[in-house]
Length: 580
Image: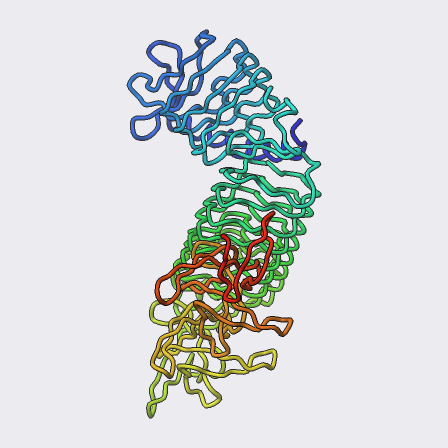
């Protein structure tokens, strides 16, 4: 029996999603009876239709790929519900979507082969098909709704469950509440179905393979013991409420492959402290981080154009946020009751801010461009406004910046001509600093920073020419501090790799001898991209001759006799494997 919480959540989503949208859609486009009287359908775009209902009596049904000359692309909500005489059905290759409850309670249906054209299967699509023992789902299906195959013969057969987890082909369908500790999803899995781990309160960790492309609605909702999760660079979508109520979740890595995050995806994650969204996202959906009461840091990418309603409501620990240039709208109650929010930077691109967006943010100051919508909004709502567009002046070869006539000193965020906000540093004399600078930060320590010729502080990866005339790759944190030593850094594929930077900040590549924490020096190897190699590696020497080496998980090269798996290998003092 499906977990009760899952049923409630999916039914709530069903009530929200279908009755209202269905009524609205029907008002615009009423269903049509087919010429043969067997089908009721609704016209869509591109000369296509979705089936609303079937009134025939065929027990072995072949759904046509066209009806009245229109291509059939969808099977709508409850289209074949409770057709108990239906024994078999063939779905045409033209269909891409199977809707909620589409074949629910077809109790005589024994097998179903989903065609390769289908991309989504709705909630409870085959629920209650108690004779359905054979199910084939192609790897290309992108999303499967909660309860899609619940209470089918396949679902009810205990032999199909492995350690309390049910898979169908390359898709993880559901895990029972008894699943606990850390769970590794099997390789080749493509989707995690809606509500799959919903309510698994003893689940502490999940390893998601790189084959997974989609995480369904409510997939991990209510997993109150889940402390952390890494989403691989293969995932493109995170469903609605996917991690809602994961109250122990303290961190999450979202790769750049993710292009959509559903509403309420991380709401009520009360232990989540920081999050960086990838630059593949264009919007922050409604309620995405609502009630994340421990959230102190949010980094929004420049790709985002809208922030949904209630997106950060009741994030009572959030003190500051910079709205990226390109955002045009901030939704209704977006930052409602963010009581510690003191600093919001709003760019010129914003032209709409919803009602109560900053309700009860009593210490808030809005930073923005003079004469912008942000300034008008601030004044209309009695919120202090601080202009950050500076006027740069060159005197005797030095550059100074004035904001409202006041010369700037120290670290200052200043909006430049492109409408973006950059961090600058001005000495006590007001002179804008460029190039390498040693600056004492708030912790009392001095760090090396780098500022471009325009004074903008560099962050992230930077190619910088050093005193020897050569260009080296460096990495600077979001605070501008140059990184040295060992650093775990997320790369463009969404995965995190270990790198090593010398005391001068230059990224190391190739062979490197590095002293570790135990005081001993070990050989390591770093690719041309700086990523530390582990495991078996084939590496060419200066003459182009390739040798096989093995590196431990911490990157140290193996020498001598070393057991890997069940076999012992011999490595010479140079690390070359002598019996590969």
